[in-house]
Image (cartoon, helix red, strand yellow):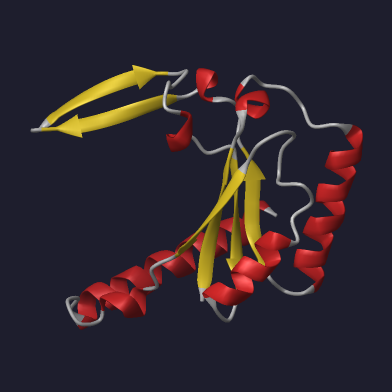
Length: 146
């Protein structure tokens, strides 16, 4: 199964402070372990919310909200996509993350990613086939950009 691991920032990360060289190196080693184990599918860090925007939809209207965003618990500092056998395996990998992904306080949230097969009870064969074609197209584009 695939999971998304969301890195929730502490105040230092949201303020745009860069990690120490020591932590940056430790995170590099950690990512190497994930790659060597065949767990890491992708991931990146994100700039602070002050450099972002949100688009909110309500009753058919769209509202654009420029960062920074006040609710720190709703922020994400980065993410990984992992291929694991179980939620328990993902938790074990998360516990190995060096001192959290950023200096100071941080939190990792692990969420299972829906697979097309999860929608089989409600999706027609045509919809499932269309989804697979789109996935193949994205993979082809990514391979061309590599």
